[in-house]
Length: 353
Image 1 (cartoon, rainbow, N blue to C red):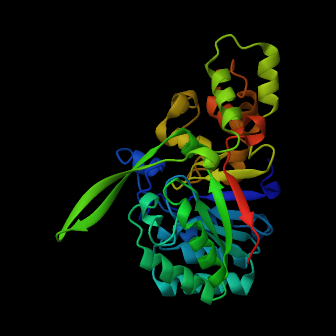
Image 2 (cartoon, rainbow, N blue to C red):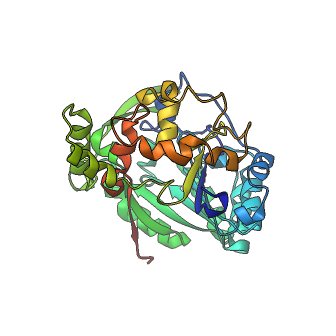
């Protein structure tokens, strides 16, 4: 892919975070977690040509960290927007000072090229249940500082069984401060219950209590049965050529079909967040399957972005490997992106009140 044709870049500018969400890969794998963060200079080095920034959407999110935790996040956002790139942050919002958020809001207002997805799963009584370790008063102060400064953004609410009753309170709060409002459903939440470790003060002592987080009924992902069929296909040792062709041809790849790439906090480049997650956990022996390539083959510490995107794995083998008979086949590509990305999050935006 020609770097000039990229439409979207997801930057995991840090693998650090203040929260301990029970469904997060970071929380579940603290034993193998390595803290890495971009500097503004790193981003300038990755994207030195303003023509490769202009009209491109940069999503500051990631698998492991919260972008607002990066001390150079403001500088990175300013560099992107100053060069005509669109910048979107996805954050729990309960980090940094009110002044920091005021500055971010000013960038948003001045450029019209920055918005924030505040991932707030509940309201005052329930947000901390999934967004473990976040403090409501800090979050409330920060989003007010951002919107008061003219910042634009959306309150995105994952609906669980325990927080559904606070939906109206969250909607009203979002409307009051000028945020858009959306609900989100994740496939993982429809497959798994999570157990949160919540700290509470009792008799002047800090105790940890467990809370099981469930997603049932109408709150489940609407395409769960599609993914169950994909799971059955993956496990089937007697796949027919016709069935394989039908499944593989239904894949909609973020990289190949939508012009998107993912850059992890360790500065490795991937087609999507899903394959970076696989590399982080070494799912499907992805590390061994790609071991024939030289050390740092997809690292921006060793190569330019253009060199990496011209590597044979990105250029040819990735798409070929969707076939289960390929020696570098990764079932993750089928499970997350077949049936036109059936696995992906469902987000419903509501009309602003």
